[in-house]
Image (cartoon, rainbow, N blue to C red; front, side, top):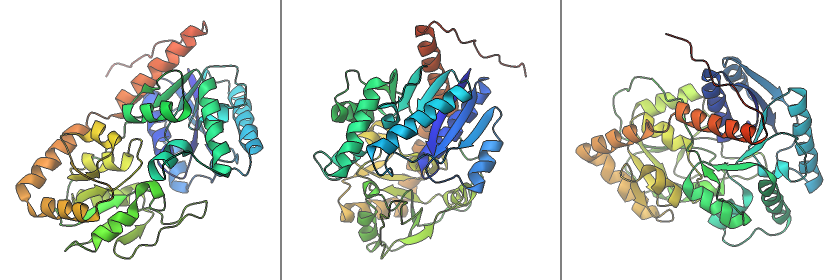
Length: 369
């Protein structure tokens, strides 16, 4: 079986695609990752080259959320369909439902709802997108209605996606998985840490910046403060580290800081998973997706409560017993979200769709140890 995965190199979608391709490779399934928007970095290219059975294609096609007009998105969808035919793939997996709004693929299509403008808008601003944002959200809804299966990384986000786009069926939940770091922990240090697209309003870093002014120790943040569309966040109290490599982030997490997120919108949160796997105690915003994934393994705070966030982080840092117990629980929970589990569930979906079209995919052959 060969699967085409669309991805962008800007945020967590790339990491998802690379991890999924790695997991599928272990099952004997080949992948073609079609990168849209800005090109991948040299580190991302190296990651792709290390995965057996993966073909990386840099398409130069526009991302749906950076396209100037609906016709650009439609053309991008047709470009992906042509690429799928050229590489003779069995199933197409889209990272953006809008790509399926007009394109004809002629083979099963899965859309993974990593995020979308409509759900982001409702979580950060309330109501429905306006102006040029409306057509972007409408295209996503049209595309999701046309694909053979919609997948969401949490049940909470599946519900949000169905509600915003008025889908007939609830998307299938497949929790994200992550290749977890095997780095040895270093001496535990007293600071707070966060990571992600800091410029994204959904990350609500402004609240963390105000909370940082109330902390007796630093709050370090990894990630870009300016996005490709010109969005930017200015930080007065957080120590911005810039965009770090995976190895650099692993080094920061090895000190087991308290990982904090005040996100208003987080369909899953790979950065939280990485921190939990490293043994960091978690202080997270009280939103449905975080509750679903980390209930019993994190402290939850109203995302707009800067005082509460600062107090929660301070209390955890200064309570050795609570911090150690939270670290243990987070690490145990993180182990449940494996690449193997994610890849296995996605492979089952591919086989089910192929069976529905009369194509029977072979079962993976596992080599003896």
